[in-house]
Image 1 (cartoon, one colour):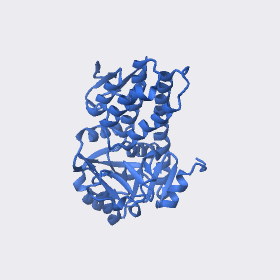
Image 2 (cartoon, helix red, strand yellow):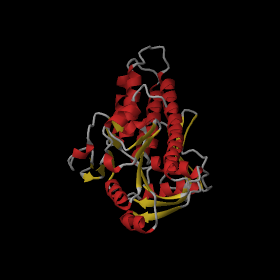
Image 3 (tube, one colour):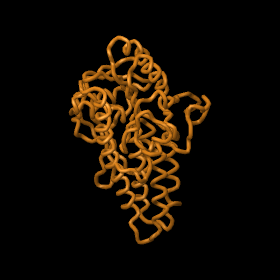
Image 4 (cartoon, helix red, strand yellow):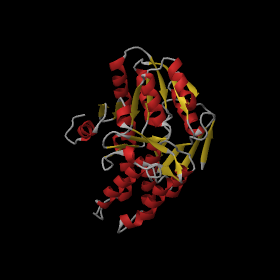
Length: 336
């Protein structure tokens, strides 16, 4: 079921809503021209929303998957073995984006929680719904905190409004919004990447926040850096190795090289869940490695840690990242 409206979407309107035990998703394919809400009432609806691009950014797909598991549990109602009862739903949601670190992290976390719910008196559907709601709230808080920390990192170098080249990644956009709120943004140039939907959505999001933004073909990034006095390149990350190497959308490495050549600072913004400490060093991955290939296409590349000025996460900043600094950031004893 879809609910259609052509009323402009305000910045404070959420793109995901959990209401009356079902999920509503603002169809990102239709923005900014119109507002269409897609309703999900079971895990199959949630999986279709991810596969069909109704929801596109990494954090949102993870949340939709979490709500999908809650919807599946509600449909079942009662089960003697919840792990077995939901196994097919976990698998179908995982198949929607097998290379997504965040989505798989969410499903793994929910699976671990489910295995601990052994008391037959527990209301498992309600507990899974509350887990999804908690993840949603945490995601919003993560974005707020990373935006504030990104502004702090930018202000360390210059307190004046600056110019940015930005990838169409949700985490990077959150950093820009934080910098804009702090009065640190003069102009943003958005890299038009391979996904027209992602670029359109990113531009809409910055427009909603009244951030001055202009689209720029990624192939012209070098000339723009050379001629327009940019100060920062801001990107997201699909995965971050233990030493700080970043796996992200193909083209990120080229932007890092260009930034180094032109003297720009290079910022990576990501949730701490993007860190993969089992991956010691991403720079030695072969081009055909499954971490880089999706459907036999090279869609991700590796940016070595030495090209990165700062990694921003909700747990703090890592300047000039290396293995020891990342381990310190992720230490359970570290104070936030």
